[in-house]
Length: 438
Image (cartoon, rainbow, N blue to C red; front, side, top):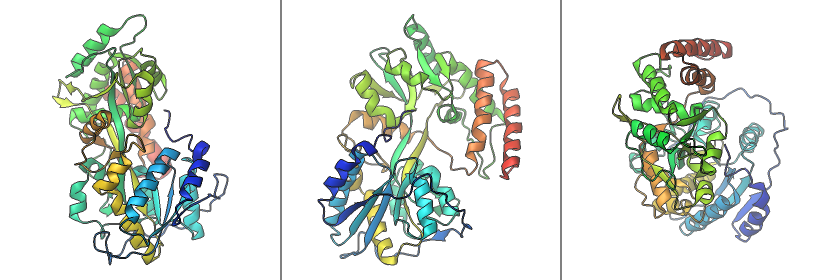
């Protein structure tokens, strides 16, 4: 799908000039590119940050440098500049060095910098990076730094994106996820149940409108297991689908398919919605600003997920976060400054700046933030009832077989039992070939 951050290089020069006006802040031009051959290091043991000697609330004077690497676009960088300005009102001695990398280069550049012994002190990156970076010893376990009060302020689903195997991998700065968009110029009302959604979509079908365009790729369909009161993985990390919940999930997808056009990991559903040929769309919150511009701000709405009559549970979308990670090897003074800034990002003041509809338009991770933008409020309400994206080390090995099971039952008429049996065999083989856990 389209990504809102893919064109950041085009306007980066403007941001460099603007941020250079602040004497205590600089932007560094990255020198690492994807072509660099990075040797594979011997993975160190995961590191735990030592108990802090000071916090953002108790330190009257805080020196140190926050060396921050990220892949944000120019509008997001401008918003970040506002956050830094607000932070420096309390900590004027802290200096900042910011390095921007394109999205597909950031992680490679970061890992190379760690190997070379010149990493940043903070890294902004998706939650999916956390487990591998922590196991390789590149980022710190923040368990000793974050107290229960901090956890209580953060949305529980967002917190699950940093809580991994007893370690706290970072802090969740921004929520993202899959929601159910509706074009109300076509479908005037939300559907309370899946049956209502199917009926409404079928009534709307004509020569131009397909009802609803659906993508049945993993990111869009696997989370619907929640409506069957199931989870993809059990507490041990084993796949938890070869059971009644798994069969229920595939039956649900068969029912949902009747709403309209089904595709797999293509942009068909997005194109149908943008051209007003589809009334509903399951899509990432990152697409919301662009969708509103394309079909009209008054026409775009996010619906509550409908109930599935078989279980009386709601459908749901995956939720993930953009995290801030504290990096191993940071000097104590820079670590204190970096933690103070990371902590400030999770204050109401920091979160409101980042959520500005005219700025970064981030969805806050704090549970209690009241948003004035109606579309943002609808999205956060939907994400609060979503499903945490699994932080599973071998998740990529499960995706293709599970998509094959969905394809088999929804397009080829296979039974849920047979489809899941075949998927499990393929997953076992993939895990065996990769040396992963079976």
